[in-house]
Image 1 (cartoon, rainbow, N blue to C red):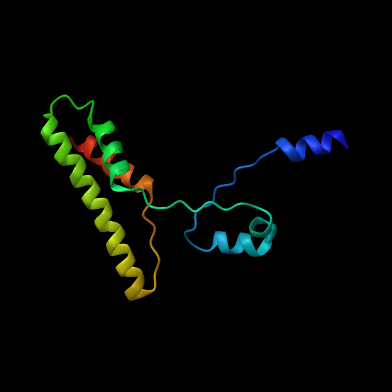
Image 2: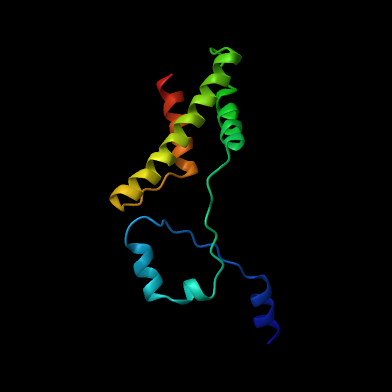
Length: 117
């Protein structure tokens, strides 16, 4: 009994699944306790300040760019990411198809620019 109580108190599992496609829906139907007995964290979009901070962090080490260019480039990355979010909402409204733009998508945008540079 002591062991079971300790496990209940201290044993935690993080289960991460993508909401894209049918697998999540299928798993939720097969295992209803995933919904009923868990805490589900849906990640909300990042605020502009956080996006700008991430861009500044990645562009900080690029020595060939002036600081003013790094700042403008970071602002442009934020603008592009927020535009994609707006168009994704419009796409869903018009065509009833959900697309997902995640923080990983934003990191991929920055990394792509750094690779091209």
